[in-house]
Image (tube, rainbow, N blue to C red):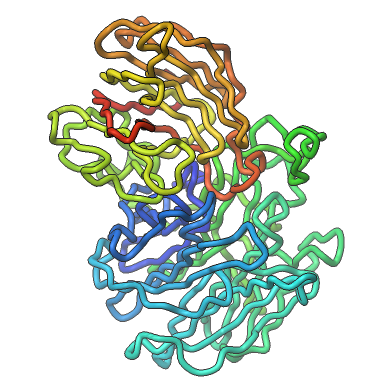
Length: 559
């Protein structure tokens, strides 16, 4: 049996993995999307299923007002003596000079909770990681942000002891890495035999991304960086990476880095890492003149965002971890550690991100494939019981809101997909809208919606937002009374929208749209998440006009 990468497709960045008995769990970043920290489960590293979220209590996590691609960053999931530990960052301010990076730890005896109240850690930077040493001591390692102009160093990592009984950081902190040219982040510490390994992401999170490893006989260092002849480097600003795609632009798994390692029950080692599958499009070479921003001119676009893959690890005679199979480039197919002869139907045919094809809203609670923006969808926003068999959504703030949107969405996992819904909605003014959305963030989306126009009455409109530049892609189209079906079909992220009164006879609206502007490198403010699709409702009058959605369907592949 082989592991087929990416194992978690679509928006699943910054993976952290832990094994407890036969169960493997991966935690991934969720940024401004609620609930916080997505969890995936497997028993063989091959078949994965969605397993809900960890940070689900609004009394313990407030994301209202966090900016685009801020919020929950780089969770670190560990287990020690019957307790799960999750360290994570809540980023409150990032696209500025002085960063606000609040680091916390929560604990639970059960992976599905309940989880403890958040325990504050130090806030030197983001990417906190907890290490449990053999003597019972625990340490937190993280990167350090530097707001000074110019920065003193390209990258820093610090270590400090954490007292689990007192539930606080104790003792002095120590700088264990200082690089004048090589930037490291996403650190994890492992112990194997008598060595402490400092496992770090290097060189940002774009196409130059990679993974570096250092080691020491003491947890406090000094740490020596692994350097070998098989590690290709073009200049001294490139890290010595054991995993990277930076010199292999034609392979499937680009942006590879930000790794975490796990040991199987029989002593085999694997690493999980983030990656991205590049689309065909690129940013214009005159990107700066187009949007007044110099970032990523000419770069490839990644509308699916950063995903999660798995690689098998071998150990050199000198005790360094390397890719089994040689080189530094990630493999799209990897040997599995072993398999069972039979697998539950839910696992063998429901890899993470491919559940819940058509949701007819017959459950009293929202399915775990959905997330909302910054806030939970309480009864102020949605109801699954007010009209059984429908999702009733009450219109709240506009699509640019960082505080109170009525919106649910799920990850887009492939370049080819279709999405469809049917809704009943009776707007009375143009400020009332409800419909189907494909989006990257609150500045970048395609929104096919029902609304009201003074000249044509109830109508369908198609709105595009690209980096806060907005345009209607069609004239308002009047629609009949009753339910209206809305659909989007993507082929290689070229998206065509449709509407109608039954799902077998839909009519196109507008022209085909190249949707890859909803991409990591194409979004001006945030670029850490991935494209989502879902349903939403706005009422800018403040009266809370509701829409009733009959179903929501997401399909990939042939349709």
